[in-house]
Amino acid sequence: MKQFKLGLVINPIAGIGGSVALKGSDGIGIAEQAIALGATAKSNTRASLALEILLPYKENIIIYTAAGDMGEHTAKALGFNTQVVYKVENRLEHRHTTELDTEQAVGALITKDIDLLLFAGGDGTARNVCHIVEDKFPVLGIPAGCKIHSGVYAITPKAAGRVVELMITNQLVSLTDADVMDIDESLFRQGIVKAKRFGEMQVPSELRYIQAVKSGGIESDELVLQDIAADVIAKMDDELFIIGSGSTTAFVMEELALDNTLLGVDAISEQALIASDLTEPQLWQLIQPYAQGKVKLLITLIGGQGHIFGRGNQQLSPRVIRAIGKENIIIIATKAKLNALAARPLIADTGDSELDMVLSGYLAVITGYNDQVLYPVASPQ
Image (cartoon, rainbow, N blue to C red; front, side, top):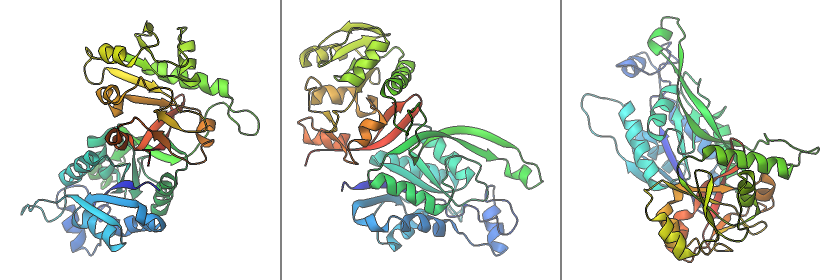
């Protein structure tokens, strides 16, 4: 089983004011006031409930986290392989961690190429995470605050652990956009509820078939492929799109009414075909004038095998893939095609072992219109 890289951030004072009727922990001096009234922090305990679900897999998990009560103590107490990537500064004016600590810890974690960011807190914590992550990286919240209006949290701490367990055991996990909401605590303490949307983040959840299905719950391939194509086409702007081989990518070209090289690599720009059946040198020359992020690579997997690189698309060489960038690779497939892999990972076999490792981890796979799943990618052993 591949090593799962889990990011963990705990807001140690999340919800500390709830038990003493302070309606939360946001605001200057609220944590100190809560402690003076006899409140105790419970966010680390709730994080433990989530992590305990993962104990059977701890040999296959490495937890990247922040020092002390921001994650380190809880992870180590449960025996997880733990690496600290952020330490709270010694600021005499603060007895407790601040919003800045949460944001800086999250910033440090996402540089470690983690598979998922797990955080414990309330709506204020979700806002801090969203400020750094936005909607570019999968996260999941462990509910530990007084206010849990945001859709980025699991329904219970143990439920959060179960979702991560699905990912670790290579089950199909949907990737959905969820709103980050919060209310004004100062008004809430006056009995006024005023909620506001602050953004959205990508959240893994249990697999849900949301596109058209035949009787018996089996996907209708043509309808699903139409949904996938519609999603991809809606994302096309002024970038150069490199279209990889395969029947799934060919369906996108068909929806655009463009000629396609089924077993080759084509290029389109502004939804018009500009090059067909490209060789590796031709492809390399074509992408040179484009700035970083302005070239997208659309690929699918080989059914039954799971290869995304190294089988039938050798034109996509290591130097081409590196130039395009992992973050600009778009993978498309039906859920039926993914399920046929029986939880086996996708394979990146570029011929460059270092690049294969870079491509390893969990990547989003477009499986319908506004529907994605997270799926593991492994390098050859």
